Image (cartoon, rainbow, N blue to C red):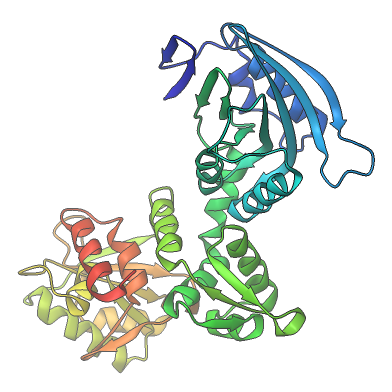
Length: 390
């Protein structure tokens, strides 16, 4: 939904912008500062009853600690506003907090409360994260990104256009929650509010120090961790585990389902099948971890009965032998055993032995349940409340 609000005029639904807005989503991701300012200017000029022009590029007094990358003159229905533009490659919450601090120090910014301003600061970037946009809206500071989103709390005019996240940012965020980086996130969520050095975290997450360091730097930009120390002694602590898990939860809907094999094991209930799976895998030293409803039921009982057991299993001759011991038959429907193909030992991080079976970590079970059917999502929230705790 796009919304533009101007004095005495309200537009709901799609804002007609002469085709310029649709082009923004397809632009080359490597943009120069001047190109980004030009796109902002084109977007403003395409709005109804608006006149906008570039007043200056790289404005500011000589020697001033605060300079603006561009200055735009914006007129709407008799009201004139100067837009002071700061250009960045991308913006996350940490970048925005620094930007807001610089504005306040410069005196060009009066905050969300106070006299109406004729000059409005605006952050323009190729991509701005959702959390960063919220911070800017809360402080009534404008923003623009190449996805076409625009916020301008100007005197005499309030403009808000929300568009989908630019593809470059969406892809970067998705990759953050997959592969080796996700193992770092898993380790942080397994021990929230504890301090980690890069080397310690790399060992905990079974990744390289470079991957751990890169992921921690990204977490800092989202304002989910705090840091202390410098250089090799630098440590980070996850202070917002709930926000991190929420972000990961949102990404599960965009990720492809893992490869699953469905079996029917005759003559056994799902409750007893859990023990038989554990026994068969242990007998052949096959690496596995039970997940979904069967694991959640062990961690935090919720259902009156189970219909199937799902587990991750690392492909090997030992795994094949374990499946053979169960007398499991491949089926398309009516499966009571579902095997999820594990890709590496990292898929079993922080599994826990509960009774006779190895269970996937509560965080992994929670994320898996969000992809489930029936009451799986209810069970996920119950598990999060009762066992995960954030």
